[in-house]
View 1 (cartoon, rainbow, N blue to C red):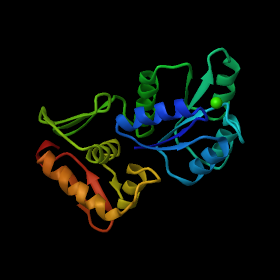
View 2 (cartoon, protein in one colour):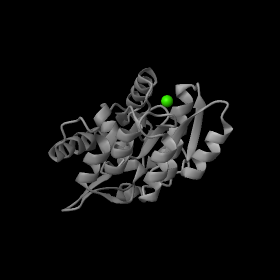
View 3 (cartoon, rainbow, N blue to C red):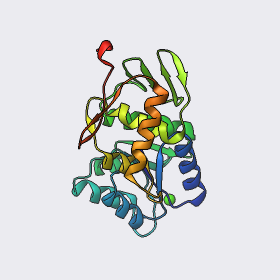
Length: 223
Ligand code: CA
């Protein structure tokens, strides 16, 4: 899952990006409204954290513009605590949720998990596919109850496939949603990660659909 953080306060921006990266997301950052608007318009983010008070272009204008051009990614706005009118304006502009400053990072992380899972049609923070379980709160993965250790890239890959289980996901889509913009992207590395992930899971849940991509489905005997 790939996120965009638009926040002009450098410390807050860094804290948010670090927390999201540690939680297993690929993260891009912007420090003003114009840069944030451009990135949100051109990159396929799974969700966005958007501060409202931003230099160059305010958050409400950024959000309104994205929604006008048909962008539907979930957006969590950051508002000032005592400004209820910010929240109303934000929701009317197309926000999906808000957090008032100052906030606890844990709350932002929990709200982000909820936004991401709802956007892909899941009701709980624990995703399952046959014997494979992925807990998006703890980042833990198990097969038949046995914990599996994954690298951060393997976790991101599995999390994306689990959020979109039952649908064919192309290699291009994976590259766009697993890596931040600064990452040296090469779709061949996806094959390598899929190979490693299959080996670690030890069961056949990731099918290769020739010419199209990958499909996560429960193993035949668990269906
Ligand atoms: Ca600000």
